[in-house]
Amino acid sequence: MGEVRFMISEAAKQVNVESHVLRYWEEELGLKIGRTEMGHRYYTDDDIKLFCCIKKLKDEGMPLRDLKPLAAELRETRLKLKSEDVQKTSPPPEPAQEKADQIRALFGDLFREILSENNIILKNDISSLVTADVVHEVDFLLQAKERQQEEHFRKLDSLIRQQQTHRKESARNAAMKLKKLFMPS
Image (cartoon, rainbow, N blue to C red):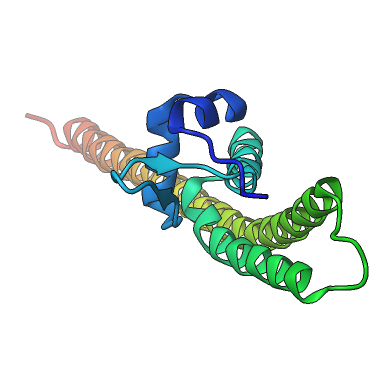
């Protein structure tokens, strides 16, 4: 029995996206989608399952660029699963649900691994950014404190000089008064 094929509009409905989204994902992720003799895209059940997984991961916030390596690994796993099915002659082929579960489990493991690595990178990036911001802020506060102290000492110096000037003037005035008292005119 032949493989069921869906045109892009039907595949897009099953994935619950627009047709152009499937074309975009195909191009960005480097997916190999089958073509008819006339060059039209067709999608298999496996392709639709893959796109559903991609949509789920995108909806959970994973950027498309992070999915690219996953798509290649998933494609290899799908090919291995298909070749294992062909090689198995005595036992019946695995049900489609089991395959879907295996693909979901693979995606889940890969997703957790990528998230874990991403969290470590984010932690390091945030830590370095916060450290840089704190160092910058402390430096700014220290410079402000230094400027405040310099201004305080300038004012103090100015007051001391004024006091010295007043004392000198007072001493001169007192000396002049004494001269006037002791020296008659």
